[in-house]
Amino acid sequence: MFGRLIFTLLLAVFLSAMAGIVRADTPTVAIVYPDVREPYRSVFLEIARGMEEELGKPVGHYLLNDRDSTAADRLIGALKNDRIDVVVTLGRAGLAVARPLSAAFPVVIGATMIRPDEVPQGLAGISLTPAPEAMFDHLKKLVPDIKKVTVIYDPRQTAWEIEHAERAAKERDLILTAQPTGNLRDSSDLFRQILLEIKDNSIALWLPRENAAMDEQSLLPEVLREAWEKNFVVFSSNLDHVRKGALFSLYPDNFGMGRSLASLALQQARPGGKFESVKLLRDLLVAVNLRTAEHLGLRFSSQTRREFAMVFPTP
Image (cartoon, rainbow, N blue to C red):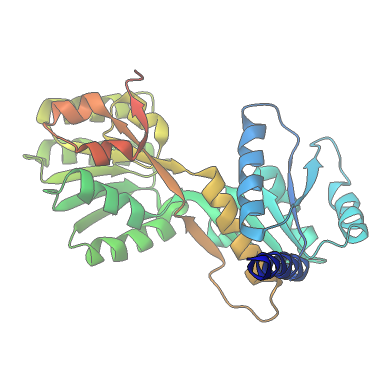
Protein backbone atom coordinates (compact mmCIF):
# COMPACT_ATOMS: atom_id res chain seq x y z
CA MET A 1 0.00 0.00 0.00
CA PHE A 2 2.82 2.40 0.98
CA GLY A 3 4.72 1.56 -2.21
CA ARG A 4 1.66 2.28 -4.34
CA LEU A 5 1.21 5.66 -2.63
CA ILE A 6 4.84 6.59 -3.30
CA PHE A 7 4.46 5.55 -6.96
CA THR A 8 1.31 7.67 -7.33
CA LEU A 9 3.04 10.71 -5.82
CA LEU A 10 6.10 10.30 -8.04
CA LEU A 11 3.88 9.95 -11.11
CA ALA A 12 2.00 13.13 -10.22
CA VAL A 13 5.27 15.03 -9.77
CA PHE A 14 6.57 13.71 -13.10
CA LEU A 15 3.42 14.66 -15.00
CA SER A 16 3.42 18.11 -13.43
CA ALA A 17 7.04 18.61 -14.43
CA MET A 18 6.32 17.47 -17.98
CA ALA A 19 3.38 19.88 -18.22
CA GLY A 20 5.70 22.67 -17.11
CA ILE A 21 8.18 21.74 -19.83
CA VAL A 22 5.44 21.75 -22.48
CA ARG A 23 4.26 25.19 -21.33
CA ALA A 24 7.81 26.49 -21.38
CA ASP A 25 8.24 25.27 -24.96
CA THR A 26 5.00 26.91 -26.09
CA PRO A 27 5.61 30.29 -27.78
CA THR A 28 4.70 33.36 -25.76
CA VAL A 29 1.61 34.92 -27.35
CA ALA A 30 0.29 38.46 -27.02
CA ILE A 31 -3.12 39.81 -27.98
CA VAL A 32 -3.51 43.38 -29.15
CA TYR A 33 -7.01 44.86 -29.11
CA PRO A 34 -8.74 48.24 -28.77
CA ASP A 35 -9.44 49.71 -25.35
CA VAL A 36 -13.25 49.60 -25.54
CA ARG A 37 -16.19 49.49 -23.15
CA GLU A 38 -18.59 46.66 -22.49
CA PRO A 39 -20.05 44.61 -24.06
CA TYR A 40 -17.25 44.65 -26.66
CA ARG A 41 -14.51 44.29 -24.05
CA SER A 42 -16.04 41.01 -22.83
CA VAL A 43 -15.85 39.65 -26.39
CA PHE A 44 -12.09 40.21 -26.50
CA LEU A 45 -11.63 38.76 -23.01
CA GLU A 46 -13.59 35.63 -23.95
CA ILE A 47 -11.37 35.21 -27.02
CA ALA A 48 -8.34 35.55 -24.72
CA ARG A 49 -9.69 32.83 -22.42
CA GLY A 50 -10.06 30.50 -25.38
CA MET A 51 -6.50 31.22 -26.44
CA GLU A 52 -5.19 30.48 -22.96
CA GLU A 53 -7.11 27.22 -22.87
CA GLU A 54 -5.49 26.15 -26.15
CA LEU A 55 -2.00 27.33 -25.23
CA GLY A 56 -2.04 26.09 -21.66
CA LYS A 57 -0.53 29.37 -20.46
CA PRO A 58 -1.55 33.04 -20.08
CA VAL A 59 -1.40 35.50 -22.96
CA GLY A 60 -0.17 39.06 -22.71
CA HIS A 61 -2.78 41.82 -23.11
CA TYR A 62 -1.87 45.03 -24.96
CA LEU A 63 -4.52 47.73 -25.41
CA LEU A 64 -4.77 50.13 -28.33
CA ASN A 65 -5.77 53.75 -27.89
CA ASP A 66 -7.24 55.28 -31.06
CA ARG A 67 -5.70 58.65 -30.16
CA ASP A 68 -2.17 57.22 -30.06
CA SER A 69 -0.51 57.96 -33.41
CA THR A 70 2.64 56.06 -32.37
CA ALA A 71 0.79 52.89 -31.33
CA ALA A 72 2.74 50.52 -33.58
CA ASP A 73 6.19 51.80 -32.55
CA ARG A 74 5.22 51.79 -28.88
CA LEU A 75 3.82 48.28 -29.16
CA ILE A 76 6.86 46.85 -30.91
CA GLY A 77 9.08 48.15 -28.14
CA ALA A 78 6.84 46.77 -25.39
CA LEU A 79 6.42 43.40 -27.10
CA LYS A 80 10.17 43.02 -27.58
CA ASN A 81 10.84 43.94 -23.96
CA ASP A 82 8.34 41.28 -22.87
CA ARG A 83 9.93 38.68 -25.17
CA ILE A 84 6.75 37.98 -27.10
CA ASP A 85 7.08 35.37 -29.86
CA VAL A 86 3.85 35.86 -31.83
CA VAL A 87 1.08 38.49 -31.84
CA VAL A 88 -2.67 38.11 -32.34
CA THR A 89 -4.47 41.35 -33.26
CA LEU A 90 -8.21 41.71 -32.69
CA GLY A 91 -10.77 44.04 -34.26
CA ARG A 92 -10.38 46.70 -36.94
CA ALA A 93 -7.97 48.66 -34.76
CA GLY A 94 -5.84 45.54 -34.44
CA LEU A 95 -5.91 45.06 -38.20
CA ALA A 96 -4.62 48.62 -38.63
CA VAL A 97 -1.42 47.85 -36.70
CA ALA A 98 -0.95 44.31 -38.04
CA ARG A 99 1.24 45.35 -40.98
CA PRO A 100 3.82 47.37 -38.99
CA LEU A 101 3.87 44.70 -36.26
CA SER A 102 4.54 42.02 -38.87
CA ALA A 103 7.94 43.58 -39.56
CA ALA A 104 9.03 42.42 -36.10
CA PHE A 105 6.76 39.46 -35.20
CA PRO A 106 4.64 36.71 -36.72
CA VAL A 107 1.09 38.12 -36.68
CA VAL A 108 -2.38 36.56 -36.71
CA ILE A 109 -5.48 38.69 -37.38
CA GLY A 110 -8.87 37.96 -35.81
CA ALA A 111 -12.24 39.26 -34.59
CA THR A 112 -12.89 41.38 -37.67
CA MET A 113 -14.35 41.06 -41.15
CA ILE A 114 -11.39 40.49 -43.46
CA ARG A 115 -10.81 39.25 -46.99
CA PRO A 116 -7.60 37.75 -48.38
CA ASP A 117 -6.87 40.92 -50.36
CA GLU A 118 -6.88 42.95 -47.12
CA VAL A 119 -4.21 40.87 -45.40
CA PRO A 120 -0.53 41.70 -46.00
CA GLN A 121 1.53 38.87 -47.43
CA GLY A 122 2.87 36.50 -44.81
CA LEU A 123 0.11 37.17 -42.28
CA ALA A 124 -2.65 34.77 -41.30
CA GLY A 125 -6.12 35.39 -39.94
CA ILE A 126 -9.64 34.21 -39.25
CA SER A 127 -12.48 36.35 -40.58
CA LEU A 128 -15.74 36.84 -38.69
CA THR A 129 -17.50 35.65 -41.85
CA PRO A 130 -19.25 32.33 -41.08
CA ALA A 131 -17.98 29.46 -43.23
CA PRO A 132 -20.58 28.52 -45.89
CA GLU A 133 -19.89 24.85 -45.10
CA ALA A 134 -21.28 25.39 -41.61
CA MET A 135 -24.23 27.43 -42.92
CA PHE A 136 -25.23 24.67 -45.34
CA ASP A 137 -24.75 21.92 -42.76
CA HIS A 138 -27.19 23.66 -40.43
CA LEU A 139 -29.59 24.33 -43.29
CA LYS A 140 -29.67 20.63 -44.18
CA LYS A 141 -30.11 19.69 -40.54
CA LEU A 142 -32.97 22.10 -39.86
CA VAL A 143 -34.70 21.81 -43.26
CA PRO A 144 -33.70 18.47 -44.85
CA ASP A 145 -35.96 18.96 -47.89
CA ILE A 146 -34.04 21.97 -49.20
CA LYS A 147 -32.50 21.24 -52.61
CA LYS A 148 -31.57 24.69 -53.92
CA VAL A 149 -30.01 27.81 -52.43
CA THR A 150 -30.09 31.24 -54.05
CA VAL A 151 -27.82 34.12 -53.07
CA ILE A 152 -27.46 37.65 -54.43
CA TYR A 153 -24.13 39.20 -53.55
CA ASP A 154 -21.75 42.08 -54.17
CA PRO A 155 -18.57 40.54 -55.67
CA ARG A 156 -16.46 43.38 -54.29
CA GLN A 157 -17.22 42.13 -50.78
CA THR A 158 -18.09 38.46 -50.91
CA ALA A 159 -16.57 36.90 -54.05
CA TRP A 160 -14.15 34.70 -52.08
CA GLU A 161 -16.97 33.64 -49.71
CA ILE A 162 -19.09 32.62 -52.70
CA GLU A 163 -16.20 30.57 -54.12
CA HIS A 164 -16.14 28.60 -50.86
CA ALA A 165 -19.93 28.33 -50.97
CA GLU A 166 -19.95 26.86 -54.47
CA ARG A 167 -17.62 24.06 -53.40
CA ALA A 168 -19.52 23.49 -50.17
CA ALA A 169 -22.88 23.29 -51.95
CA LYS A 170 -21.59 20.75 -54.45
CA GLU A 171 -20.22 18.56 -51.65
CA ARG A 172 -23.65 18.60 -49.98
CA ASP A 173 -25.74 17.93 -53.11
CA LEU A 174 -27.17 21.44 -53.04
CA ILE A 175 -27.71 23.52 -56.16
CA LEU A 176 -26.34 27.00 -55.50
CA THR A 177 -27.47 29.86 -57.72
CA ALA A 178 -25.19 32.82 -57.03
CA GLN A 179 -26.07 36.08 -58.77
CA PRO A 180 -23.62 38.99 -58.57
CA THR A 181 -24.80 42.57 -58.56
CA GLY A 182 -23.00 45.88 -58.47
CA ASN A 183 -25.54 48.27 -57.00
CA LEU A 184 -28.70 48.42 -54.89
CA ARG A 185 -31.01 49.15 -57.82
CA ASP A 186 -29.93 46.03 -59.70
CA SER A 187 -29.99 43.91 -56.54
CA SER A 188 -33.52 45.08 -55.73
CA ASP A 189 -34.66 44.02 -59.20
CA LEU A 190 -32.93 40.63 -58.80
CA PHE A 191 -34.47 40.00 -55.38
CA ARG A 192 -37.95 40.89 -56.61
CA GLN A 193 -37.55 38.62 -59.64
CA ILE A 194 -36.46 35.75 -57.40
CA LEU A 195 -39.38 36.34 -55.05
CA LEU A 196 -41.72 36.01 -58.03
CA GLU A 197 -40.06 32.79 -59.19
CA ILE A 198 -40.02 30.93 -55.87
CA LYS A 199 -43.01 28.59 -55.91
CA ASP A 200 -42.27 26.10 -53.12
CA ASN A 201 -40.17 25.55 -50.03
CA SER A 202 -37.48 23.46 -51.74
CA ILE A 203 -35.57 26.70 -52.43
CA ALA A 204 -33.88 28.72 -49.69
CA LEU A 205 -32.60 32.29 -49.89
CA TRP A 206 -29.23 32.96 -48.25
CA LEU A 207 -28.26 36.45 -47.09
CA PRO A 208 -24.46 36.89 -46.60
CA ARG A 209 -23.28 38.83 -43.56
CA GLU A 210 -21.40 41.56 -45.40
CA ASN A 211 -23.63 42.37 -48.32
CA ALA A 212 -23.99 45.78 -49.94
CA ALA A 213 -26.53 44.14 -52.26
CA MET A 214 -29.13 44.16 -49.46
CA ASP A 215 -31.01 47.33 -48.53
CA GLU A 216 -31.67 46.71 -44.83
CA GLN A 217 -34.30 49.43 -44.51
CA SER A 218 -36.67 48.71 -47.38
CA LEU A 219 -35.69 45.50 -49.20
CA LEU A 220 -35.06 43.20 -46.22
CA PRO A 221 -38.56 43.66 -44.74
CA GLU A 222 -40.04 42.96 -48.17
CA VAL A 223 -37.99 39.76 -48.56
CA LEU A 224 -38.94 38.50 -45.10
CA ARG A 225 -42.61 39.34 -45.66
CA GLU A 226 -42.67 37.42 -48.95
CA ALA A 227 -40.91 34.48 -47.30
CA TRP A 228 -43.58 34.39 -44.59
CA GLU A 229 -46.43 34.58 -47.07
CA LYS A 230 -44.98 31.96 -49.45
CA ASN A 231 -43.56 29.67 -46.74
CA PHE A 232 -39.98 29.52 -47.98
CA VAL A 233 -36.75 29.62 -46.00
CA VAL A 234 -34.55 32.67 -45.58
CA PHE A 235 -31.34 32.07 -43.64
CA SER A 236 -28.64 34.61 -42.98
CA SER A 237 -25.03 35.06 -41.94
CA ASN A 238 -26.20 38.18 -40.07
CA LEU A 239 -27.50 37.48 -36.55
CA ASP A 240 -29.79 40.52 -36.53
CA HIS A 241 -31.77 39.09 -39.46
CA VAL A 242 -32.95 36.19 -37.26
CA ARG A 243 -34.50 38.61 -34.81
CA LYS A 244 -36.34 40.17 -37.76
CA GLY A 245 -37.67 36.85 -39.10
CA ALA A 246 -34.98 34.84 -40.92
CA LEU A 247 -35.05 31.17 -39.90
CA PHE A 248 -31.52 30.91 -38.54
CA SER A 249 -28.07 32.41 -38.44
CA LEU A 250 -24.64 31.42 -37.20
CA TYR A 251 -22.61 33.78 -35.05
CA PRO A 252 -19.14 33.65 -33.44
CA ASP A 253 -18.33 31.32 -30.57
CA ASN A 254 -15.77 33.68 -29.06
CA PHE A 255 -14.13 31.10 -26.79
CA GLY A 256 -13.83 28.61 -29.66
CA MET A 257 -12.51 31.33 -31.95
CA GLY A 258 -9.85 32.08 -29.35
CA ARG A 259 -8.72 28.47 -29.43
CA SER A 260 -8.51 28.54 -33.22
CA LEU A 261 -6.56 31.82 -33.20
CA ALA A 262 -4.11 30.32 -30.70
CA SER A 263 -3.66 27.26 -32.91
CA LEU A 264 -3.00 29.52 -35.89
CA ALA A 265 -0.54 31.54 -33.81
CA LEU A 266 1.40 28.37 -33.03
CA GLN A 267 1.54 27.60 -36.76
CA GLN A 268 2.78 31.11 -37.48
CA ALA A 269 5.53 30.74 -34.88
CA ARG A 270 6.81 27.60 -36.61
CA PRO A 271 9.49 28.32 -39.21
CA GLY A 272 8.36 27.58 -42.75
CA GLY A 273 4.77 26.76 -41.87
CA LYS A 274 2.37 26.88 -44.84
CA PHE A 275 -1.33 27.61 -44.44
CA GLU A 276 -4.25 29.56 -45.86
CA SER A 277 -3.76 33.29 -45.29
CA VAL A 278 -7.37 33.97 -44.26
CA LYS A 279 -9.80 31.38 -42.99
CA LEU A 280 -13.55 31.62 -42.71
CA LEU A 281 -14.96 31.23 -39.22
CA ARG A 282 -15.94 27.71 -38.16
CA ASP A 283 -16.29 28.31 -34.42
CA LEU A 284 -19.96 29.18 -34.51
CA LEU A 285 -23.15 29.12 -32.48
CA VAL A 286 -26.64 28.83 -33.95
CA ALA A 287 -29.55 31.22 -33.43
CA VAL A 288 -33.05 30.18 -34.54
CA ASN A 289 -36.33 32.06 -34.91
CA LEU A 290 -38.81 29.58 -33.42
CA ARG A 291 -41.81 31.60 -34.57
CA THR A 292 -40.60 31.36 -38.18
CA ALA A 293 -39.81 27.66 -37.74
CA GLU A 294 -43.30 26.95 -36.42
CA HIS A 295 -44.84 28.90 -39.30
CA LEU A 296 -42.83 26.78 -41.76
CA GLY A 297 -44.09 23.62 -40.08
CA LEU A 298 -40.64 22.60 -38.85
CA ARG A 299 -40.34 20.30 -35.85
CA PHE A 300 -37.10 19.91 -33.93
CA SER A 301 -36.06 17.13 -31.59
CA SER A 302 -35.12 17.93 -28.00
CA GLN A 303 -31.49 17.22 -28.85
CA THR A 304 -31.55 19.66 -31.77
CA ARG A 305 -33.20 22.34 -29.63
CA ARG A 306 -30.45 22.00 -27.03
CA GLU A 307 -27.96 23.00 -29.74
CA PHE A 308 -29.66 26.39 -30.22
CA ALA A 309 -27.47 28.91 -28.40
CA MET A 310 -30.00 31.69 -28.97
CA VAL A 311 -33.68 31.72 -29.89
CA PHE A 312 -36.11 34.39 -31.05
CA PRO A 313 -38.53 35.71 -30.05
CA THR A 314 -36.76 35.96 -26.70
CA PRO A 315 -38.63 33.88 -24.08
